[in-house]
Image (cartoon, rainbow, N blue to C red; front, top):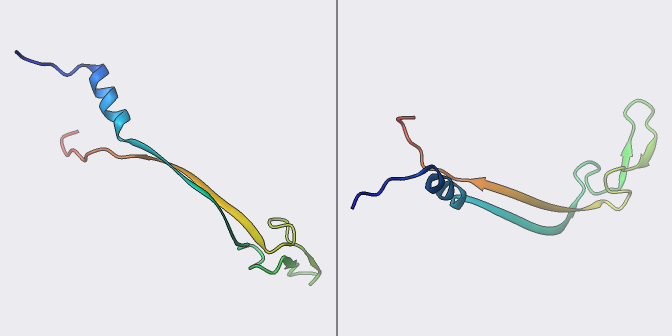
Length: 76
């Protein structure tokens, strides 16, 4: 008995290769102010509260990634 791959079968195979990864939030140093909570204006030298961490020097970082992994084929 001969089997033929249908368009539907190929779609299912591709979907099986897609993986979703989610990283839970973690606390990290704010990169914008380097953890100080303050920024200095280079022109006026005025110190102000960092708008990214709101002065705490810390931020929460999380990530959601979707990986689509397929075999490499040279004859495409």
